[in-house]
Length: 410
Image (tube, rainbow, N blue to C red):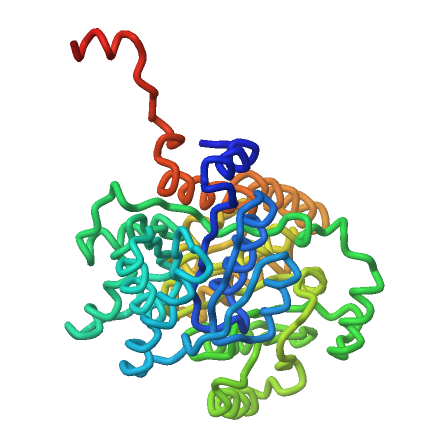
Protein backbone atom coordinates (compact mmCIF):
# COMPACT_ATOMS: atom_id res chain seq x y z
CA UNK A 1 0.00 0.00 0.00
CA UNK A 2 1.21 3.56 -0.65
CA UNK A 3 2.96 5.29 2.21
CA UNK A 4 1.90 8.67 3.60
CA UNK A 5 4.84 10.18 1.72
CA UNK A 6 3.58 8.70 -1.54
CA UNK A 7 0.09 10.03 -0.82
CA UNK A 8 1.52 13.53 -0.43
CA UNK A 9 3.27 13.13 -3.80
CA UNK A 10 -0.09 12.50 -5.43
CA UNK A 11 -1.00 16.14 -4.80
CA UNK A 12 1.28 17.26 -7.63
CA UNK A 13 -0.59 14.92 -9.99
CA UNK A 14 -3.93 16.30 -8.90
CA UNK A 15 -4.24 19.69 -10.61
CA UNK A 16 -1.85 21.23 -8.14
CA UNK A 17 -4.07 20.74 -5.11
CA UNK A 18 -4.53 18.08 -2.43
CA UNK A 19 -7.31 15.53 -2.95
CA UNK A 20 -10.53 16.39 -1.10
CA UNK A 21 -12.70 13.82 0.68
CA UNK A 22 -16.24 14.49 1.89
CA UNK A 23 -17.54 12.33 4.76
CA UNK A 24 -21.31 12.34 5.26
CA UNK A 25 -22.94 11.46 8.60
CA UNK A 26 -26.30 12.33 10.23
CA UNK A 27 -24.92 14.11 13.30
CA UNK A 28 -21.74 14.60 15.29
CA UNK A 29 -23.06 13.81 18.75
CA UNK A 30 -21.35 10.72 20.16
CA UNK A 31 -20.72 7.10 19.23
CA UNK A 32 -18.51 4.87 17.11
CA UNK A 33 -19.65 6.25 13.74
CA UNK A 34 -18.87 9.79 14.81
CA UNK A 35 -15.56 8.85 16.42
CA UNK A 36 -14.44 7.07 13.26
CA UNK A 37 -15.41 10.10 11.19
CA UNK A 38 -13.26 12.37 13.34
CA UNK A 39 -10.31 9.97 13.23
CA UNK A 40 -10.36 9.68 9.44
CA UNK A 41 -10.73 13.45 9.05
CA UNK A 42 -7.64 13.92 11.23
CA UNK A 43 -5.72 11.28 9.27
CA UNK A 44 -6.59 12.96 5.96
CA UNK A 45 -5.34 16.33 7.20
CA UNK A 46 -2.16 14.76 8.54
CA UNK A 47 -1.54 13.12 5.16
CA UNK A 48 -1.85 16.48 3.41
CA UNK A 49 -5.32 15.86 2.00
CA UNK A 50 -8.38 18.06 2.48
CA UNK A 51 -11.10 16.73 4.78
CA UNK A 52 -14.69 17.99 4.83
CA UNK A 53 -17.49 16.54 6.96
CA UNK A 54 -21.18 17.25 6.32
CA UNK A 55 -23.69 16.62 9.11
CA UNK A 56 -26.54 18.19 11.04
CA UNK A 57 -23.99 19.28 13.64
CA UNK A 58 -23.37 18.38 17.25
CA UNK A 59 -20.78 18.74 20.01
CA UNK A 60 -18.12 16.82 18.08
CA UNK A 61 -17.97 19.47 15.37
CA UNK A 62 -15.25 21.18 17.39
CA UNK A 63 -13.16 17.99 17.17
CA UNK A 64 -13.48 18.04 13.39
CA UNK A 65 -12.33 21.63 13.26
CA UNK A 66 -9.61 21.11 15.85
CA UNK A 67 -8.17 18.39 13.61
CA UNK A 68 -7.85 20.94 10.80
CA UNK A 69 -10.83 19.61 8.84
CA UNK A 70 -13.92 21.55 7.74
CA UNK A 71 -17.56 21.07 8.70
CA UNK A 72 -20.66 21.94 6.69
CA UNK A 73 -24.06 21.90 8.37
CA UNK A 74 -26.85 20.27 6.36
CA UNK A 75 -30.11 18.56 7.49
CA UNK A 76 -28.61 15.10 7.06
CA UNK A 77 -30.12 13.55 10.19
CA UNK A 78 -33.62 13.69 8.71
CA UNK A 79 -35.30 10.50 7.45
CA UNK A 80 -38.06 12.48 5.78
CA UNK A 81 -38.09 11.38 2.09
CA UNK A 82 -38.60 14.98 0.94
CA UNK A 83 -35.59 16.20 2.93
CA UNK A 84 -33.48 13.25 1.74
CA UNK A 85 -34.38 14.13 -1.86
CA UNK A 86 -33.53 17.80 -1.38
CA UNK A 87 -30.23 16.85 0.23
CA UNK A 88 -29.13 15.38 -3.11
CA UNK A 89 -28.97 18.83 -4.65
CA UNK A 90 -27.43 20.32 -1.51
CA UNK A 91 -24.64 17.75 -1.51
CA UNK A 92 -24.13 18.02 -5.27
CA UNK A 93 -23.63 21.76 -4.93
CA UNK A 94 -21.17 21.17 -2.09
CA UNK A 95 -19.25 18.56 -4.09
CA UNK A 96 -18.88 20.86 -7.07
CA UNK A 97 -18.23 24.08 -5.13
CA UNK A 98 -15.52 22.50 -2.97
CA UNK A 99 -13.99 20.32 -5.74
CA UNK A 100 -14.65 17.16 -3.76
CA UNK A 101 -12.92 14.12 -5.25
CA UNK A 102 -14.48 11.30 -3.23
CA UNK A 103 -17.64 10.93 -1.13
CA UNK A 104 -17.77 8.61 1.89
CA UNK A 105 -21.16 7.92 3.53
CA UNK A 106 -21.45 6.28 6.94
CA UNK A 107 -25.21 6.08 7.61
CA UNK A 108 -28.27 5.12 5.61
CA UNK A 109 -30.47 8.23 5.33
CA UNK A 110 -27.65 10.59 4.28
CA UNK A 111 -26.12 7.81 2.19
CA UNK A 112 -29.08 7.87 -0.20
CA UNK A 113 -28.57 11.58 -0.78
CA UNK A 114 -24.80 11.17 -1.04
CA UNK A 115 -25.11 8.25 -3.46
CA UNK A 116 -27.12 10.20 -6.03
CA UNK A 117 -25.09 13.37 -5.50
CA UNK A 118 -21.85 11.45 -6.12
CA UNK A 119 -23.27 9.74 -9.19
CA UNK A 120 -24.52 13.03 -10.68
CA UNK A 121 -21.13 14.60 -10.01
CA UNK A 122 -19.14 11.64 -11.31
CA UNK A 123 -17.28 11.12 -8.03
CA UNK A 124 -16.28 7.79 -6.46
CA UNK A 125 -18.65 6.73 -3.70
CA UNK A 126 -17.56 4.80 -0.59
CA UNK A 127 -19.75 3.45 2.20
CA UNK A 128 -18.99 2.01 5.60
CA UNK A 129 -21.21 -0.71 7.05
CA UNK A 130 -21.13 -0.14 10.80
CA UNK A 131 -23.61 -2.89 11.61
CA UNK A 132 -25.83 -5.49 10.00
CA UNK A 133 -29.01 -3.37 10.27
CA UNK A 134 -32.36 -5.00 10.91
CA UNK A 135 -34.58 -5.45 7.87
CA UNK A 136 -37.63 -7.67 8.09
CA UNK A 137 -39.70 -6.04 5.33
CA UNK A 138 -38.79 -5.54 1.70
CA UNK A 139 -38.97 -1.77 2.13
CA UNK A 140 -36.54 -1.90 5.04
CA UNK A 141 -34.09 -4.07 3.12
CA UNK A 142 -34.28 -1.63 0.21
CA UNK A 143 -33.60 1.29 2.57
CA UNK A 144 -30.59 -0.54 4.03
CA UNK A 145 -29.23 -1.60 0.65
CA UNK A 146 -27.71 1.80 -0.10
CA UNK A 147 -24.85 0.88 2.21
CA UNK A 148 -23.87 -1.85 -0.27
CA UNK A 149 -23.89 0.51 -3.27
CA UNK A 150 -20.43 1.98 -2.79
CA UNK A 151 -17.76 1.63 -5.45
CA UNK A 152 -15.93 0.28 -2.44
CA UNK A 153 -17.68 -0.89 0.72
CA UNK A 154 -15.93 -0.97 4.09
CA UNK A 155 -17.14 -3.42 6.75
CA UNK A 156 -15.96 -2.78 10.29
CA UNK A 157 -15.71 -6.51 11.08
CA UNK A 158 -15.76 -9.86 9.34
CA UNK A 159 -19.15 -10.45 10.97
CA UNK A 160 -20.56 -7.41 9.15
CA UNK A 161 -18.82 -8.36 5.90
CA UNK A 162 -20.27 -11.88 5.90
CA UNK A 163 -23.75 -10.46 6.50
CA UNK A 164 -23.39 -7.96 3.65
CA UNK A 165 -22.39 -10.67 1.19
CA UNK A 166 -25.25 -12.94 2.24
CA UNK A 167 -27.92 -10.24 2.44
CA UNK A 168 -27.11 -7.92 -0.46
CA UNK A 169 -25.20 -10.26 -2.75
CA UNK A 170 -22.29 -7.86 -2.47
CA UNK A 171 -19.33 -8.73 -4.67
CA UNK A 172 -16.43 -9.51 -2.29
CA UNK A 173 -14.13 -7.66 -4.72
CA UNK A 174 -15.83 -4.39 -3.70
CA UNK A 175 -15.72 -5.23 0.00
CA UNK A 176 -12.90 -4.48 2.44
CA UNK A 177 -12.81 -5.33 6.14
CA UNK A 178 -11.25 -2.50 8.13
CA UNK A 179 -11.68 -2.98 11.85
CA UNK A 180 -12.32 0.09 13.92
CA UNK A 181 -9.31 1.27 15.83
CA UNK A 182 -8.56 2.71 19.22
CA UNK A 183 -6.33 5.70 19.89
CA UNK A 184 -3.64 3.92 21.89
CA UNK A 185 -2.02 7.17 22.93
CA UNK A 186 -5.27 8.35 24.50
CA UNK A 187 -6.28 4.96 25.88
CA UNK A 188 -3.00 4.26 27.64
CA UNK A 189 -2.98 3.33 31.35
CA UNK A 190 0.45 4.88 31.83
CA UNK A 191 -0.83 8.25 30.56
CA UNK A 192 -3.54 8.66 33.20
CA UNK A 193 -2.51 11.09 35.95
CA UNK A 194 -3.94 10.19 39.38
CA UNK A 195 -5.64 13.61 39.54
CA UNK A 196 -7.95 12.55 36.71
CA UNK A 197 -9.04 9.47 38.65
CA UNK A 198 -9.54 11.46 41.85
CA UNK A 199 -11.66 14.07 40.08
CA UNK A 200 -13.90 11.49 38.40
CA UNK A 201 -14.27 9.36 41.53
CA UNK A 202 -15.29 12.48 43.45
CA UNK A 203 -17.78 13.50 40.73
CA UNK A 204 -19.39 10.06 40.79
CA UNK A 205 -19.16 9.78 44.60
CA UNK A 206 -17.45 6.41 44.50
CA UNK A 207 -16.68 4.60 47.75
CA UNK A 208 -13.07 3.69 48.39
CA UNK A 209 -12.36 -0.03 48.17
CA UNK A 210 -15.70 -1.14 46.68
CA UNK A 211 -15.19 -2.96 43.33
CA UNK A 212 -16.65 -1.18 40.31
CA UNK A 213 -18.65 -2.94 37.60
CA UNK A 214 -19.10 -0.62 34.62
CA UNK A 215 -21.47 -0.82 31.67
CA UNK A 216 -20.65 2.03 29.23
CA UNK A 217 -22.96 2.83 26.33
CA UNK A 218 -26.04 4.70 25.32
CA UNK A 219 -29.01 4.12 27.60
CA UNK A 220 -31.08 1.98 25.29
CA UNK A 221 -32.77 -1.38 25.77
CA UNK A 222 -30.54 -3.53 23.58
CA UNK A 223 -27.36 -2.59 25.46
CA UNK A 224 -28.22 -5.16 28.14
CA UNK A 225 -28.71 -3.03 31.26
CA UNK A 226 -31.53 -5.26 32.53
CA UNK A 227 -29.43 -8.41 32.11
CA UNK A 228 -26.61 -6.86 34.12
CA UNK A 229 -29.04 -5.90 36.89
CA UNK A 230 -30.30 -9.49 37.05
CA UNK A 231 -26.75 -10.83 37.08
CA UNK A 232 -25.64 -8.49 39.87
CA UNK A 233 -28.69 -9.40 41.95
CA UNK A 234 -27.47 -13.02 41.93
CA UNK A 235 -24.00 -12.18 43.24
CA UNK A 236 -23.45 -13.25 46.86
CA UNK A 237 -22.04 -9.84 47.81
CA UNK A 238 -23.17 -6.24 47.99
CA UNK A 239 -19.85 -4.45 48.51
CA UNK A 240 -20.05 -3.33 44.87
CA UNK A 241 -20.66 -0.26 42.77
CA UNK A 242 -22.41 -0.69 39.41
CA UNK A 243 -22.05 2.25 37.04
CA UNK A 244 -24.21 2.82 33.96
CA UNK A 245 -22.14 5.30 31.94
CA UNK A 246 -23.96 6.86 29.02
CA UNK A 247 -26.46 9.38 27.77
CA UNK A 248 -30.14 8.77 28.54
CA UNK A 249 -31.61 11.86 26.88
CA UNK A 250 -32.91 10.00 23.85
CA UNK A 251 -34.76 7.42 25.93
CA UNK A 252 -36.03 9.02 29.16
CA UNK A 253 -38.75 6.38 29.52
CA UNK A 254 -36.13 3.65 29.51
CA UNK A 255 -34.34 5.25 32.44
CA UNK A 256 -37.58 5.18 34.44
CA UNK A 257 -37.98 1.47 33.66
CA UNK A 258 -34.44 0.86 34.88
CA UNK A 259 -35.07 2.77 38.09
CA UNK A 260 -38.18 0.69 38.74
CA UNK A 261 -36.27 -2.56 38.22
CA UNK A 262 -33.36 -1.39 40.37
CA UNK A 263 -35.77 -0.70 43.22
CA UNK A 264 -37.51 -4.07 42.77
CA UNK A 265 -34.16 -5.87 43.02
CA UNK A 266 -33.14 -3.74 46.04
CA UNK A 267 -30.03 -2.52 44.23
CA UNK A 268 -30.61 1.19 44.72
CA UNK A 269 -27.64 1.60 47.02
CA UNK A 270 -25.09 0.16 44.56
CA UNK A 271 -26.35 1.01 41.04
CA UNK A 272 -25.68 4.52 39.75
CA UNK A 273 -26.57 6.12 36.39
CA UNK A 274 -23.83 8.70 36.00
CA UNK A 275 -24.45 10.00 32.48
CA UNK A 276 -21.78 10.60 29.87
CA UNK A 277 -18.12 10.57 30.79
CA UNK A 278 -15.94 13.13 29.05
CA UNK A 279 -12.81 11.31 30.21
CA UNK A 280 -13.43 7.69 29.26
CA UNK A 281 -9.80 6.57 29.67
CA UNK A 282 -9.95 7.62 33.34
CA UNK A 283 -13.41 6.08 33.67
CA UNK A 284 -12.09 2.71 32.52
CA UNK A 285 -9.25 2.93 35.02
CA UNK A 286 -11.82 3.18 37.83
CA UNK A 287 -13.48 -0.07 36.72
CA UNK A 288 -12.62 -3.50 38.08
CA UNK A 289 -14.59 -5.09 35.25
CA UNK A 290 -16.20 -3.62 32.12
CA UNK A 291 -19.36 -5.22 30.74
CA UNK A 292 -20.81 -5.12 27.23
CA UNK A 293 -24.06 -7.05 27.59
CA UNK A 294 -25.69 -6.18 24.25
CA UNK A 295 -28.71 -8.36 23.52
CA UNK A 296 -28.29 -7.84 19.77
CA UNK A 297 -24.96 -8.38 17.98
CA UNK A 298 -22.83 -5.28 17.57
CA UNK A 299 -20.94 -4.70 14.37
CA UNK A 300 -17.69 -4.21 16.27
CA UNK A 301 -17.97 -3.12 19.89
CA UNK A 302 -15.61 -0.21 20.47
CA UNK A 303 -16.16 -0.21 24.25
CA UNK A 304 -14.65 -3.68 24.62
CA UNK A 305 -11.57 -2.68 22.62
CA UNK A 306 -11.02 0.58 24.49
CA UNK A 307 -11.41 -1.19 27.85
CA UNK A 308 -8.92 -3.88 26.86
CA UNK A 309 -6.48 -1.20 25.70
CA UNK A 310 -6.73 0.18 29.25
CA UNK A 311 -6.00 -3.29 30.63
CA UNK A 312 -9.45 -3.82 32.14
CA UNK A 313 -11.09 -7.26 32.38
CA UNK A 314 -13.95 -7.31 29.87
CA UNK A 315 -17.11 -9.40 29.71
CA UNK A 316 -19.11 -9.27 26.45
CA UNK A 317 -21.94 -11.21 24.89
CA UNK A 318 -20.89 -13.98 22.54
CA UNK A 319 -22.01 -12.68 19.17
CA UNK A 320 -21.19 -10.08 16.55
CA UNK A 321 -17.91 -8.24 16.49
CA UNK A 322 -17.01 -9.17 20.08
CA UNK A 323 -15.91 -12.57 18.81
CA UNK A 324 -13.18 -10.81 16.83
CA UNK A 325 -11.94 -8.51 19.61
CA UNK A 326 -11.95 -10.63 22.78
CA UNK A 327 -9.80 -13.71 23.34
CA UNK A 328 -11.83 -15.81 25.81
CA UNK A 329 -9.83 -16.74 28.88
CA UNK A 330 -6.94 -14.52 27.77
CA UNK A 331 -8.24 -10.95 27.57
CA UNK A 332 -11.80 -11.41 28.83
CA UNK A 333 -14.93 -13.53 28.78
CA UNK A 334 -17.73 -14.15 26.30
CA UNK A 335 -21.16 -15.15 27.63
CA UNK A 336 -24.40 -16.04 25.83
CA UNK A 337 -26.69 -13.06 25.23
CA UNK A 338 -29.73 -12.67 27.51
CA UNK A 339 -28.23 -15.12 30.03
CA UNK A 340 -27.92 -13.38 33.43
CA UNK A 341 -26.78 -16.59 35.13
CA UNK A 342 -23.78 -16.94 32.79
CA UNK A 343 -23.04 -13.25 33.25
CA UNK A 344 -23.05 -13.73 37.03
CA UNK A 345 -20.50 -16.53 36.73
CA UNK A 346 -18.22 -14.38 34.55
CA UNK A 347 -18.54 -11.45 36.96
CA UNK A 348 -17.47 -13.66 39.86
CA UNK A 349 -14.39 -14.82 37.94
CA UNK A 350 -13.44 -11.26 36.99
CA UNK A 351 -13.97 -9.86 40.47
CA UNK A 352 -12.00 -12.72 42.05
CA UNK A 353 -8.88 -12.32 39.93
CA UNK A 354 -5.74 -12.16 42.01
CA UNK A 355 -3.55 -9.04 41.70
CA UNK A 356 -1.02 -11.05 39.72
CA UNK A 357 -3.67 -12.41 37.35
CA UNK A 358 -5.05 -8.92 36.81
CA UNK A 359 -1.60 -7.62 35.87
CA UNK A 360 -1.06 -10.50 33.44
CA UNK A 361 -4.50 -10.05 31.87
CA UNK A 362 -3.86 -6.33 31.46
CA UNK A 363 -0.57 -6.99 29.65
CA UNK A 364 -2.18 -9.53 27.31
CA UNK A 365 -5.09 -7.21 26.57
CA UNK A 366 -2.92 -4.19 25.83
CA UNK A 367 -0.66 -6.25 23.56
CA UNK A 368 -3.59 -7.71 21.62
CA UNK A 369 -5.18 -4.31 21.03
CA UNK A 370 -1.84 -2.81 19.97
CA UNK A 371 -1.30 -5.57 17.43
CA UNK A 372 -4.78 -5.65 15.88
CA UNK A 373 -6.77 -2.52 16.65
CA UNK A 374 -4.46 0.50 16.64
CA UNK A 375 -6.39 3.44 15.13
CA UNK A 376 -3.40 4.13 12.92
CA UNK A 377 -3.97 0.80 11.16
CA UNK A 378 -7.60 1.80 10.49
CA UNK A 379 -6.58 5.22 9.17
CA UNK A 380 -3.84 3.84 6.90
CA UNK A 381 -6.13 1.18 5.46
CA UNK A 382 -8.90 3.72 4.79
CA UNK A 383 -6.59 6.19 3.09
CA UNK A 384 -5.11 3.36 1.04
CA UNK A 385 -8.63 2.52 -0.15
CA UNK A 386 -9.23 6.17 -1.10
CA UNK A 387 -5.91 6.21 -2.93
CA UNK A 388 -6.74 3.07 -4.91
CA UNK A 389 -9.98 4.68 -6.13
CA UNK A 390 -8.53 8.09 -6.96
CA UNK A 391 -5.10 7.02 -8.19
CA UNK A 392 -5.43 3.48 -9.58
CA UNK A 393 -1.96 3.67 -11.12
CA UNK A 394 -0.61 3.67 -7.56
CA UNK A 395 -2.84 0.82 -6.37
CA UNK A 396 -1.23 -2.44 -5.18
CA UNK A 397 -0.66 -4.85 -8.01
CA UNK A 398 -0.40 -2.14 -10.68
CA UNK A 399 2.72 -2.34 -12.83
CA UNK A 400 3.82 0.10 -15.49
CA UNK A 401 4.33 -1.45 -18.97
CA UNK A 402 7.90 -2.41 -19.66
CA UNK A 403 9.85 -3.51 -22.73
CA UNK A 404 8.66 -7.10 -22.46
CA UNK A 405 5.05 -5.90 -22.59
CA UNK A 406 5.84 -3.90 -25.72
CA UNK A 407 7.37 -6.93 -27.39
CA UNK A 408 4.44 -9.12 -26.38
CA UNK A 409 1.98 -6.65 -27.83
CA UNK A 410 3.86 -6.20 -31.09
